[in-house]
Image (cartoon, rainbow, N blue to C red; front, side):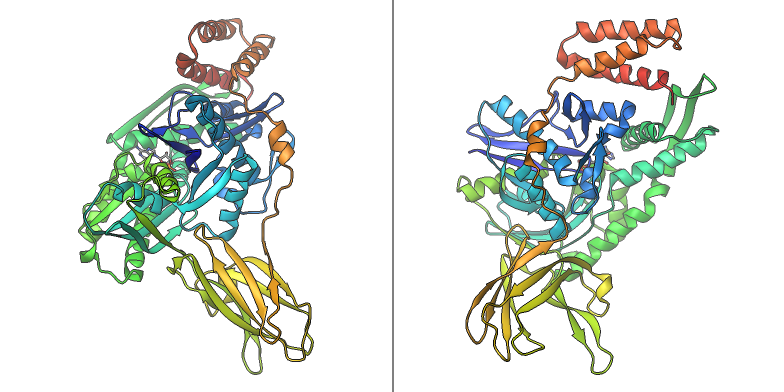
Length: 549
Ligand code: AMP
């Protein structure tokens, strides 16, 4: 099977393939988690843990949390070159494809890729483009909590109703799912595309900075270092009541080292994220109501996504719902497992389960309402929580005789009264070849299993079929060559050595500091590549400190 299951995460990505001996997680620099970080240098592109390290010393060439920009028109400049978010993401996918091929000795041409359930049309479209740019065909796009549900439900025979609470690095999704006789049915889903572990890191970073008492400017470089430290502290606080941060050379002022010595308690951290967690539980209860079920009907709440390891989440859920949530086995891997199992189901390899997914939001159009003061309102065509694929038809009447085209603005959202409270996802122009005096068209809105919309119209008098060109808001990148020409570097040791040499050649740096760096360089060159990671971290830290900050 030439399919990869890809969980393209905000912070980390995970990839799984299907083998005769079972599922296999692809490894990247010795770990199954691939940090979703991309660094572009003159030599090429680095993806993963090494790019994450480079973020500290070359932040202007490094993209982190690119998933947050997917579907937007923003571009990002790395090493003087401009990239769309989908181009940056495609580097991550390309690294996955290449690593899988290298490790498995097979070619992979297709993938099932996951997206947050609450990703809109533009964001799904951008994800699909990223996959294609990386040279893979998209077999299916599935929702992350649905993928987690597949991995949870795959080897369970009993019929149950459960919630999947998925809190990752950048997004939160909640789905209510029913497993019944091999059918995995998503009943309702809601989410927040801007809530996740990255936000907790930022809040904790602010607290650490406040507590540090440092009277220096927080530069971009320092901010990245502070965020990475905050993430480490946050993860430690999932197991400990307090963490003592002790960083001797954290920053520099007037040529002197500033020692960061701060204690952060679990209680302080929980207070920082309290409102966010409450919001996720509000959404859980809303979603449950939308599925026409009661909290007592729910047999389990499954936690997935890296951030759901924060213990106060389980406590809060218990406090507010009376349910003991359970952390899915291997929360980091469950989404990509679900993705590859879905790929296997499509291929007919594992036909035990059938998936019925839904659209997490309503889709509709802008229409005019009113007798005297006409105003634009939002008319829903495909309702939230409708199973996909689905087709709904809507009729449009011409406003003038022999009208040659119908222009339709498509929106996504739930507010019918206030059009602007919804998101415009694109527009469509339906051109009629043979206009008639009192024209009218029926328009089919088709939402496929990937949650992607296509439209087709029919003139009701002449039966003429009108292909509508649905334009989403993001521009399609045609610059495939840019991705192809930029080789992914599997070896970036050369860059590290070059960085060291630049520092060693700098006259303003003290000899004793240079000696330390020389020692590290020697160690770095003498160990095997598997052992390089901790030394590289130390080198980056030292370079970060010695360079002007
Ligand atoms: P995901 O997008 O599912 O890979 O989740 C990534 C997020 O989970 C990041 O923000 C991580 O910092 C966070 N994370 C991973 N492990 C833990 C942990 N033990 N405690 C708290 N957050 C964690």
